[in-house]
Length: 465
Ligand SMILES: [Zn+2]
Image (cartoon, rainbow, N blue to C red; front, side, top):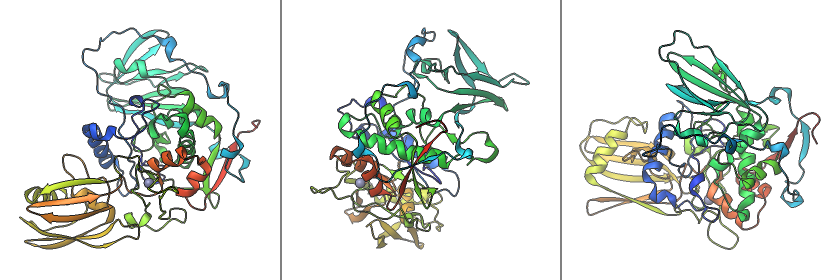
């Protein structure tokens, strides 16, 4: 999402495939620095200009091509079919997990259609499986490429991927349209919103165990709100959302589990609104004890995005399971001199060419405790940098600071940055969601905590109950 405008944002996907049911912590972070850095880098590089949202979550599963992968590995297509969500067996919905006052309403005409997801944009090659045959598509060398539409059958996967080895994890519901432009291929997956969410929740919240089921439901509602808010948000681009962290990570149904599917099903049609408009559902990985407002981006406040305490009733913070509850980064004087010069433009500060940073001071903080103004004094004068942007000034090896919730000291040639949390801190704290779910909170209570004063509404299509 960042992330940008609606953000249910922030979404780096959880490492779906790497989490066992009992392994729902983020600690993978510490062991996946490269992946994390890449993700953060992606966030930074893919953020549309002027958009402040950023999605930050645990790293996605490693999609690097495995070594020694047989090129022509036969594909077992039978394993790639899926049960359409409306045909899944259901467990009885718990009354207590339904937000109170939920009003069922007919879906507006403008939203009563499938969502269009940009699966692949500007790729050179694609592999497609149809009727058991694998074909390689390329726009190279073609003067004209005839757009190809693949109509998926109910319960049958569309199997398409950028590499042959990825085909085994490819299962897209709905239909797909392949077009070409300037020698590159684009694929848009047109899919019912509820099916789309089955391919989002496992990546945006992870595969949790039954104890944290309400966290999956909270994520499903946040992702659904995001999806509807982004209908027609990209003008004439021909799609509504990207399938990656520019919006929400969606990889089809390969990682959907009975529990993630059930979370979508039990919250079917439920969205968050404020004054009957979809909320901008920003989210982030770990707040570190207190969420943030739009002030961290110097944007006008939104009434439902207040700075809320994430203190748990039994002490500690809801997000204390996170390995980013507390963190520390150390930089030598020399590194700081280099990094600050290198990162200035990305951090949006204008500086004179200096050789040496003499002083770094935090002049004031936001009410949450995050940095508001940081002053850097150099041998050529001083400059100020604000709030969330401070994270980019310290960017090293592609990694920005985990959060702007930090203090800084200088000792014996080392700058020591001690901080809390991971992400911008605005809106829903995903690790806090997990903690609240584990403590028995329902998804209505959880979302109502992070998005204050919101209303839940439930859409239904004509003929549905
Ligand atoms: Zn938190």
